[in-house]
Image (cartoon, rainbow, N blue to C red; front, side):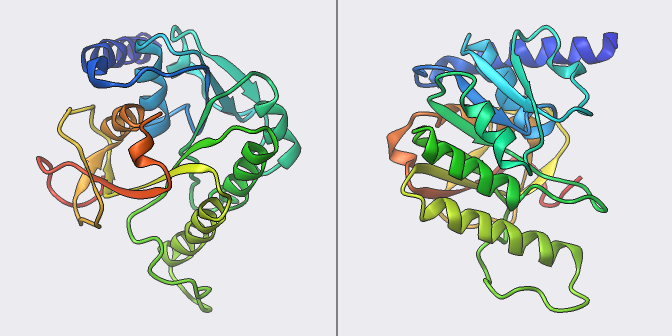
Length: 235
């Protein structure tokens, strides 16, 4: 417990040091996938800026890394459209961040969860949606055939989720990161307009998301994120 609290405090301090280049955010932010990894990194950086944050969590979510950050939580299932809609109605949100993902062997929220988020954003007039996707998405829109590997299926459903957001007419930004690593924020990640087979730490990606929260130059764009100081590949 102490180690996790210390890690959260360190990340909060790092966020405060790195937040000077971030544009002001007008209103609270709703985060899906904010209990760990990239989403948690975004939450920590937002709270370092004193931005109000609500994190959508599952009943079984481990909330220990959110302790002491001063966030609100809404409990529900991203696969349930009504739960997602109620989360949007819990405050006057201006921006929503989705870093939904899943594990092997469980029903992944990458598609249905993100479809529910996009629909709820439209219904509740929340125009700004940032969706974390994956490198390799968009290369094909053909369903994977029988016997396809795990990643082929993941990339296909993420492609469908991206397409739904793109055609929603919302002010979206889709982020396709390189190989995700488990390190801390480095301050050296970059956004590009083309795919790069690099890698990036999840905490660094979370920090970078916050820098474009209300940056109109990133609206209706797909950005690729990677860190030129790191070797390629995932951890």
